[in-house]
Length: 159
Image 1 (cartoon, rainbow, N blue to C red):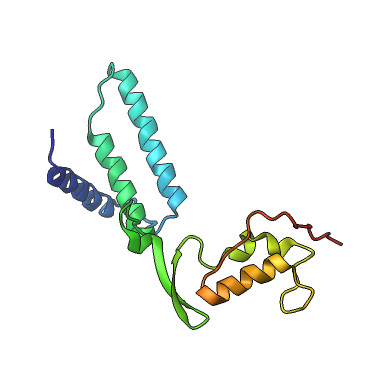
Image 2 (cartoon, rainbow, N blue to C red):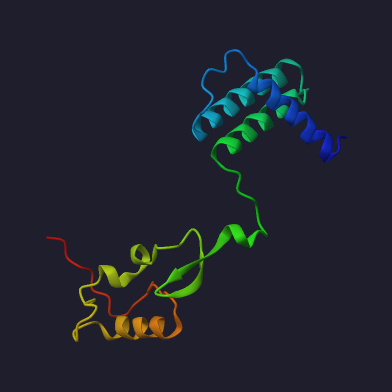
């Protein structure tokens, strides 16, 4: 069994090898091109495993890991779990610094029923009382509250 340090050293050696390939004309590749390369290596490992009665050299794993590392070098390397700085971000919203799940920032309109409701008339006395109360609560506490469920929802009819 190898230590993590030995594994990373093997992956580094694979990356060095990949960078020096003479056929490596296309330095920048899309994430899906990397996935396709990984799939090709996996297919070759399947063939090898079948031909050699269930034995699989770890060379295939090193190659797959090297390609995956190259993809992340080119397109970003998101960390898994625990790293709240990657999941939550701060920004200025109406003059106040607020926190938000980075994947949801600015998306309340596409998820909130109000923006698809006939009764939603912001800034007018005819505005839906539920939408108005929700908005006033958001202003009071500097929050954004999309409405996901509403007993008064009437879908806007498309013309």
